[in-house]
Image 1 (cartoon, rainbow, N blue to C red):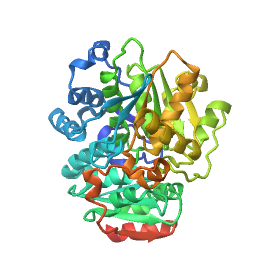
Image 2 (spheres, one colour):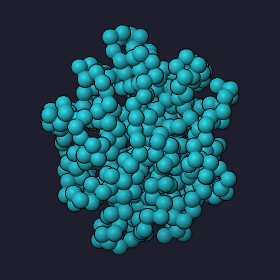
Image 3 (cartoon, rainbow, N blue to C red):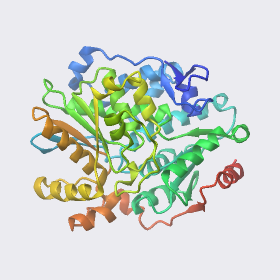
Length: 437
């Protein structure tokens, strides 16, 4: 499989170089030259395959010969070595629980796959010109913890995570600031968009990139984006009514997750319709309604991992649908959910259905219910992207009940935070990166 830049000004490359570089030299996102088409028999008989077999068949065409089959099988096995169950919530709604991994968030899948791919490439010294790899990533919440856990202790890789001060949950902050070793957290006095702009400037700095071997671990990286297809296929394996494919509602911030679902759909996965469930950051709902895409400064909400004002991956979604709005609208709808609605639905779902969604899952649930009210012959799945304990300081005041604390969280809450505070100023980031080289 070859990859091209969506800016169309960089050479075609393979999976290895696309994963190592993160972004193309022309600062465009990499995109596969063709969408893999899975055999109809595979989809029809998916229940006969293990999760490892499904994941390998989905990802192997995109990796190609960049990683030998045996090594890729090992990477896949380590990536998904935790359950991803489909749990019924009401008569026509199921939750796909993506929070059973080590950092209790859906991003564990992409981060674990990417870290193992980069670890493999780093061991092949020529792939990184003999330099230590510096993974530079901006996070609005869950990416930071998943990347920190996935790359912790990986030989030949340093990780620098930028996060907006005071705008991630206390559990998220502990996950990304307490590991130490090769994980370095920078607490930025600004928004996620400020963090993302700093990262983009670092990749655009030619002199800095001569000194360092920089790559990204955000979902702009194909090695983070592509494996997120796995759990959509796992959901289909567990879906009982194969005659009537589900509507799938995806809490959406930077739009990498739903973009992976749409790619799976283009590959042959049966899905009736997709919903981009957004919070107050409503650029995509407005675009689908008006045809006018206007990035905005991110608005802070209680579903903070979705507080993105200019989602990087939306350009990939446009490419999937050949930049034709009517084609996109036939497959994708979008809803904007307020904080007050999010709080109300967390409380209502717990009281009525004895199921507790986190704030992001609550946005996904309510967006799905709005669609199902208009399409009463449908049933659907919302992605529960994080464990509620990651947002206990939001959830507990709403429900009036304590959130059970998993062992993985209890183990980190007493650890000391270790971060470096910086202004949203590129020179400050540049100095830190050069000193760590």
